[in-house]
View (cartoon, rainbow, N blue to C red):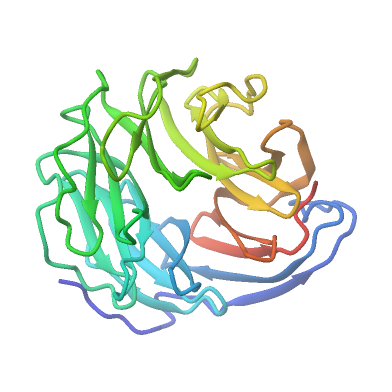
Length: 349
């Protein structure tokens, strides 16, 4: 059961709203030169609870801002004010979050846990009934997307059976048997629609091997990609301005690999942003950008294709990014018990 919780001084500090303009770097980092943010909202948890942000977009166009609270709670926040909308009961070890938008229904929050996948109503926080979703497996990562018939799906990266799972986001019903092919536990997963309309799932195991699947049929897509990384934990996908779709993978030692999601060919040389780093991505005006940050920050903005670092660093760590229709980017970062949300009106190029 989910407890609805109102706003109180115990659970939230007063939101801090700031307006930034381009200017010289100052201590603690500023927006890159030439970049403007329309607004910054900062909100915080109660003492001792570290927040990790997640950004997603519902089919309605609304931005969904979530946080996981150091291993136990899921919370949703109003992106404009920092007001907490709901908080979940304890969710034991939520490993990852994603948001799906089933047609005619409220958005669904998919939570990867030690005991399968949990679905929550994104508007109310209520736990949704349905099928047991890999309840006997640890799911390290989740991704969501749309099938050609309009249904929303959830994909999960499995530990015990080295499997990739697919479910109907509205019901939790499996979309066929688990997908097999990995020979070691699957740690990261992403989903994206290719230019030809194919809904693609890409999954990566600890050894850096990436398998691609047609999300609708479950059939393998192309040949395996054998990455150079070790103990891979992060895999993202984004559309590039030249029409290609990129897969970007970051391992625990700080090796960043980039691949063409259709052909499996490498894009550019290996990059080495450093160990214990966090990765997010977005499609901005002018092309794709990667947001990469070490554990203690700051966030650096990289051109997704050239690998060039763009502008000055941004404060915070643990970035979550979301593309906007006008070419701007929402960026959420964490700093201990607080999360800051910025809208990059002019992402650096």
